[in-house]
Amino acid sequence: MKKNLLMIEKSEQNRQEFKSIVADLYNIVEIAEICDVLPYLLKNKDSVSVILFNASNFSVEVKELLNKIRNDIMLSSIPILLIAGEQETSEEVEMLKLGALDCIHKPFHKEAIRKRIENAVRLKDSLSFYEVEHMLKELPSNIYMKDLEGRYIFCTHYWHHLDRGNDPDWIVRGKTDVEIRKDKENAAEAMKSDMNVIATGKGTTYTIEIHEDGIQEFFEVIKEPIKNKQGKTTGIIGLINHVTEYEQMKRKLEDIVRTDELTGLYSRYYFDQYLQNIQKKEMYPISIISADCDGLKKINDTYGHLVGDEYIRMASLLFRMVLPDEGAAFRTGGDEFIILLPSTSEEETQSYIDKMREKEKLFQIRGKKLSVSLGMSCIRSSLDSVDECIAASDMDMYAEKRKKKENRRD
Image (tube, rainbow, N blue to C red; front, side):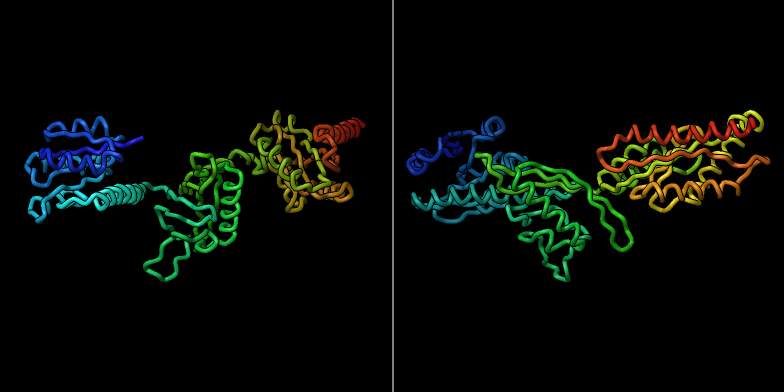
């Protein structure tokens, strides 16, 4: 489909001559009055490929028109060519200063004119690309494009985690992440992600963590494939956002949510997530210890809940004293706890229970010694039911609690 060539020319001879040269390439739209040009352009800016002006018609109205075109982000992408006589004039020079791209002098040669119009359109398209790139630099996000080899075509920001050497003229164009990133592990992951986007034609979003000079930073990376009209991936367009403040706040909130305020142990909220993580890593056998404080109600009724809270905290100290670093203790209720021991056999778990029963003698409050009932079970493989194993551990714990009550009666 032909684009429009807007001709602002009063000379009938020039109009006819240009029509004979480019009529097969463009639809010629003739406008004689300057006041009619801007309304037409605003209405038809998407269909106008080039504007032809006669330099000899320069006036205050033309100057105002050229300024308006130059200052409009859409209209400024349309190349303006001048038609002039054989000699250069001051009007021609002034119009070139105001945004005209080139001047075609008489005599008119068909092939030369066609080529100069074609080159002007291409040049303006190219300039528009760099103008857009310049505008994108004003945004805080890093916007970039890559080719099918993961090499940068451009990016709007150079951040300090790039290895630029001491070259003042260093540019990112033509380089891959592996070549320019200081963190080579993150760079390798970025290249792997790029190749996956190119291979699958599907975008991805992830967050990376960078430590440099003792500073922790987080960046959100968004990647989408660039596809041609046939749907074939031709590159990648991406966005990198600096999300350190957000990510640190998010992690702080997660720590608050997953930590029990009273004891400092993990909360019930975090239990399922933790269990899923160690199951994914296949850290079997996973031993379970169920724990419950004995006599808490009596302490609360006798001394108040503040003393009862201290009794619960003593139980959490007992767990920390005995359990290995890889163990995780969760407060799942008022005085109820579950302990998970990844890669721990039942024999090892029994030894921890025996130590807890021995060490609890060291704790007492208001003359009341700490007493915690304990039960255990084991998740031996992914085939075992987690709920059933927890239930078995609870039953074992309650059996010990009943035995203690029977002994007290005796």
